[in-house]
View 1 (cartoon, rainbow, N blue to C red):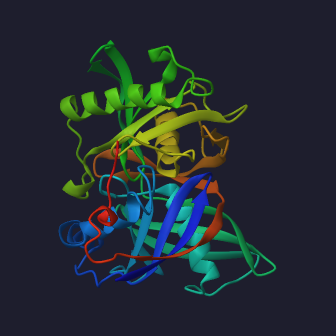
View 2: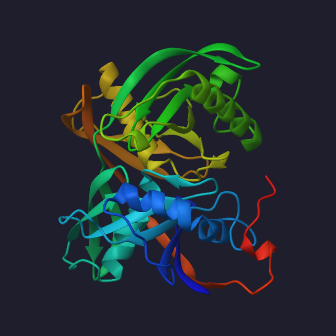
Length: 331
């Protein structure tokens, strides 16, 4: 076995893109392919994401054949626990990688492409200068906020109010101050514990569904915010998703969802820019570009901007009899 990857990061969050050696993935739709990989190749996810080749906060991309005839590339997203339906930081990396690899015809000053993700098609535009790809902006699927100021009973804390929004995945949002924390200065462990308590409570108490497909209707994680809106200065947040995984980037799908919340509250208008920062200090931009609907939900389209960088290339193997080499977690 030999699996080849391109290593990148977006705002500090790793992106491991499989470039060769992964077995064929069957399925008539992108969600079928997601289920197929989960049922047949999950051992390869563990091998690539977990130790000793990765770590509990590694993130991966598995390119597959698109079933959408208008898409240039199609991808599955994976992490320490399983497979996401959308990932903004990985989409930014994939868009730059696809342009640099010649998977789409390159044009200056901007190259456009369409990426099929499990949540649906995502359009991206990549700035190209002197043949070099740079900043990426992507517009994801319709984003909506089904729950605003929704009561949630959190163990050890009591009843709090949360917002829940969809930006390709469902997130719960709550200011870190509710837990007596500050996303800029509090220890990461304390932030993770607080966010995880909300996610656990949300999974037990919330009934989430997505009108397009049952596979999209689940709470992916919790985002703690600094309580600001990103208008005057970047609003800092931290996303804890999957199995207590910490996003080093501002979270592209989270930015999409936050903009849907702001629009639902009437605090942002079309094309009004916002900036969002992560605990590493990296910044994504966000703006609402239009109105749409997702089933019965009033929704918006949101454009998110950021930049990815290369960190190297890898070739991974597994020796016979190496049980630990199959992937393990100490978390």
